[in-house]
Image (cartoon, rainbow, N blue to C red):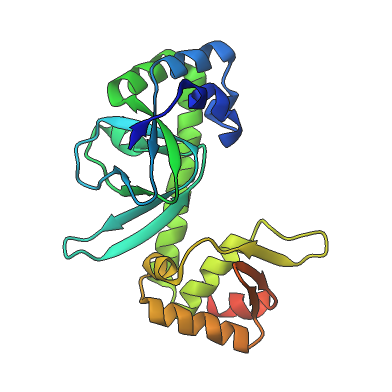
Length: 233
C-alpha cells in the first residue's frame, strides 16, 4: 500500500461513477479536500471484516473483491466492486465494525476519507446524502440477489446458471446475442455460489457439452437462455 501522486486524486476519477462524481464542482472540491489517495497492489487488504471502521474508501481505479467469512473460515464472495463504489459505507453510516473484507483485485487506487469527516460532509450536503442513499439501496439489492441465488436455488447448477444469466443480463448486442468476459476464476465463482472449484468446473463443462454456453478464452456466450433459466431460480 502506498500514497499516490495528487494527479490520481478525486478530480481525475469522475469517469468511475455517475454518482458522487456528478456532484456540483464546489461540493466535489470539498470532498476532494478531505480525501487521501492510496494505491493497493493485487491481493492487498483494503479493509478486513471485524476490524474497527475508521474510513470509507472510494474506489477510484481498478477493482476489489468483497467477501464475508463465517467463524469456521468458510468464505462467501459477495461481489467484485468496480470504480465508483464506496467501500465501508454501511459501517461508516451505522458506526460499526467492518462487516466485509475488501481485497485489491489487481492494482487499485482508492481515496480514503475518515468516517467522521465523511459523515460531517453528508450532513452538510443534501445532494451527496441522496447519492449515498441510492448507493445503499443498490448495495442492499445486490446482497438480496446474492442471498437468493445461494439460499433458494435447489442445485449448484442452478446457482451457476443464475450467476451467468445475471452477468449477461445487460450485455446483449445488436443481434440479440449475450456474451461477456468472465473475470472470475472457477475458485472465485465457487466462493460466490457456495460450492467447490471442482464442481464449478464440471458444471461449466456440462453447460458447454449441452450447447447452453460457448466459451472462448475469457469470453462466454449464452446460447440457450431459456434452458438455463429453467434450472435457475
